[in-house]
Length: 483
Image 1 (tube, rainbow, N blue to C red):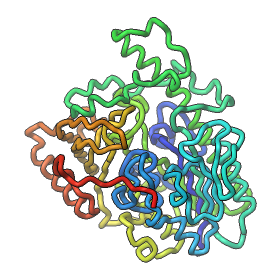
Image 2 (cartoon, one colour):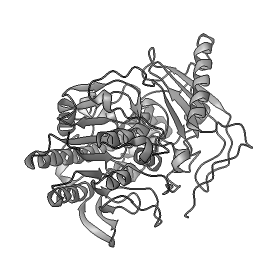
Image 3 (cartoon, rainbow, N blue to C red):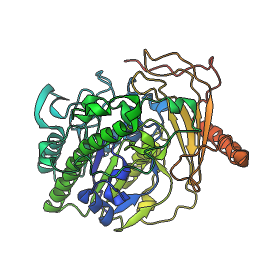
Image 4 (spheres, one colour):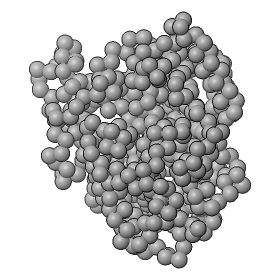
């Protein structure tokens, strides 16, 4: 078969449960749904570190944070670890990247393996953003989602039609501060958006550090909710009402930003159809991690609960993927690079020697892979960052159980607090408690399951070469420096 073209669309902080193909109760995403209907949807794709820079590095390299060195948004991606675009370029693919990169600002950390690229220096802005490319920096007027889409469509129009291409479309949206385009005014108006079932989660029984995270809906800032809060909602006695008011406005703008991304997906699909290349083009839509949409009373990500851990992924490749395919195996973001390279006919083992993931291309074709792993190992390295106070932790998720250890060694971004919290465990029975509201780590009835998950965590740490926490004197991973 002729090697496929690849369009990899990556958004930022887009929760799977705000995509209607995943059963969203709060919005509709018709163009993303089209990918699922005409191709495949994954049920269990998880990130290995739920924050922007680390997840993007894992997607590009197929490796964990301790290998690619991008453990935090404050660290720099190790440019010596090869990426799938580099390999594809060497294999004869035309390659391009437009949008968010966020893997460092040094010369060494700039995009490699691309024939053309244009990125935000850091997070970027929603309007009139400065963007950096091979020719330097310049302000690109317009709305960020539209600008990225326009550059992507231009690439498709100017490409060499005799060679396959790999196009990375990296949107800023729907990342904070959730600035929607005015054309979406009137959609998802405040006070019309359903609240999640767990919004009033008391967090009773959770680890102490989790109860102290600063990601409560009430922690949303005026800049996040835009509208002026009514004076009658002030005061601790109105905390629940205030959280509900903030939720409506946060979600209104978040969902409007999502709508722009969905429209972008539609524009790209239409172009592929118009150019007559849709049949042999693999289109992937995903996000670098999930996001709390009021679930458990939170916003943001970082924690290992499913709303944050789960990445959406919708894929269409008519020549290879049967319409309506549903992949139920446990996948992770380190599997993406191997999958794309196998689709392109590249020998993954020889081209990505540090590879820790595994291609799930066979599952996309409808095959059952008997020896596929059904557990994902996760590690969040930051600790008690000044804004979110999200704790360092690691753990394992299987289809039935989730184990989390908050090891709390104070490791985090430069300048973070040295406050040491007690080591704490959480265990969730995902069959009996799919919403993850009851921590059963201390329940004697779950002693055997807890021990089993602790053993599995140790085994996966050994397999991936990630050292477990062993106390305050444990050697710490040094933050990468510019080489």
